[in-house]
Image (cartoon, rainbow, N blue to C red):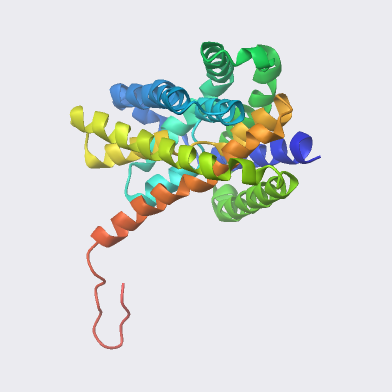
Length: 294
């Protein structure tokens, strides 16, 4: 029930809610700044898997951690990245556009990247292989279809959707938190085996991906706002999709723990970026007596 029903439903709910917040205007950025969009796609589809592969080879990671990491970085960024971009002062429209495009491409790119990297690392001998059509269909059903449905509903019923969106956001977040806790409890006996090394690798990959993205962006002389957005899009991954692939399609709940760890630890640099913006904002403006402070 947990991996076959609850996990896909929770992920579909998050994708539906993300679709409710999207409008065609968000995709206008693709036509206005195609180079920026292509850079964002390249960083997430090429740079992040390359960094994960480098860590796996340099640190000689055990098979469970290596495979879990490969699956994670092949997944699209999560809707969380859009919120973090907004709170940290990034370009929310660019963030939403990249997240939506990566999500639409995921059913095609995810099996390709996972199978290719497993072959490079000779891990395909463990009989782990993502069959194209059986992987494509569940991903379409739980990511792309709910996303597009949300966009259709938002376009058809804009005012009701706008009023209900905050409640839908809270509901999807609550469902996902409950699901994460349930998976952690169900696999509690495996957690001590992965904790120390997985913690180091997951947090290290997130920080390394953000730092490499910042360096590339600055070499290309991008604005600070766009640099920040790309850092978040590359570093913040959709742990829910990785958990779905691991636990439902591959029938390996132990691999889902890597995504679980990353989903928790990636919030550390994200909170630091948000805190950085708060500290850089001007001090509160104190109103005259009888007023309030802003």
